[in-house]
Amino acid sequence: MDSNHAVETSPQVYARIGGLIYLIVIIGGIFAELVVRGQLVVHGDAAATAHNIVTHELLYRAGFAVEIFYCACNIPLILIFYNLFKVVNRNITLMVVFFSIVGTAVEAVSLLAHYAPLIFLGKGHQLSAFTPEQLQGWAYLSLRLFEYGFCIALVFFGLYCLVMGYLIFCSTFLPRIIGALLAIQGLCYIINSFANFLSPAFAALFFPVLMVSGLGEISFCLWLLVKGVNVTKWNKQAGIVSVSGAAAKI
Image 1 (cartoon, rainbow, N blue to C red):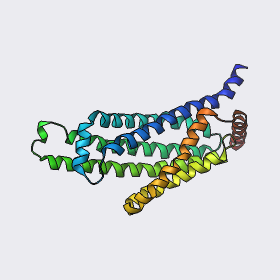
Image 2 (cartoon, rainbow, N blue to C red):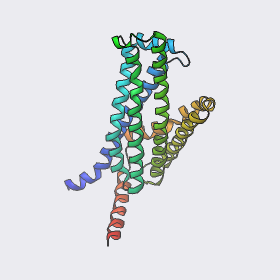
Image 3 (spheres, rainbow, N blue to C red):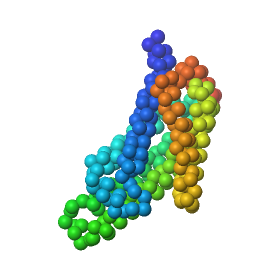
């Protein structure tokens, strides 16, 4: 009896915890992008950007720390998603795992460039050989490098969203509309990144579309957190996979 109860509640527990972690990741991303970089970085003006970072150094450091934290949150989140969606298609779920891990790794490495302005704009004696204008320029260029590193990461996150959207659409335990919205967001991530590589002017025009497409991840996150999954359908799909797996081995 207890074991049956554990089987029934396990996917629901995974869903709720996954929804909570996903919410932390989303809020962290909004804080780092809009509250920190959106307020402190002045595009095209290295001096103003440097002044803002120095004046609001604690806020800038907080943005960096939050981004590191939510990158780390991606690891348990993807493990939860693997356990939830392997009943749909194990191989495709592994693709989700690998796309997410690579995207997270690229973003984590790119964060070195996010931290660099704090070094360039610091008061270390080793910086005295350079003019303030040079240091401000390097700090600004570091942020530009971070932005392109983040665009590379978004290519992999876009692929993650596309594949996850497919899994949700094929599953019987989550609404198909969420899968469609998530796939659209993934496509928008990819278009936005390659637009930044090939035509920054078009990327600036496309950015509002990218913001609206965020409804995909938000709806997925909130559904997991509030509604969870249809446990009966999840168990049924898990049973089908088990039978087919056993048949394959025979």
